[in-house]
Image (cartoon, rainbow, N blue to C red; front, side):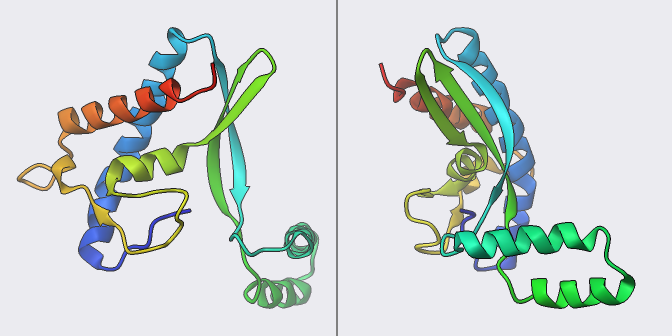
Length: 164
């Protein structure tokens, strides 16, 4: 679940950090997989708001499919209906596997843990999140070395916590 951002400065800082953090997370996962007994594959997923029922998910999915063949008038009605329903946002998961064991890791959650102070995927939107400003240098750009170190440590922790 994305962290809550309460001001435009934090939003701008997140925009600076998120793409580089994602790239570093994926690269550090690749490095860990090179020396691990686990194999991994990446998957696009849809992330729904936590309170979304299966029935609502099915309705939204059907409406989105109906939109593809709808007349302009029908499309307007569908858009109006969709505007009142929860919509998923795209996610990206890493599925790790070793023999019968399987673990799924949300890559955006890892990025949020890198970029934000005290972000926890287990406590979604519990509080407003603050950017880890140590990842931004004095001229407002990414501090690549600090970003690499923090990302490498986090990914190493993830692999260290995998089942034996």
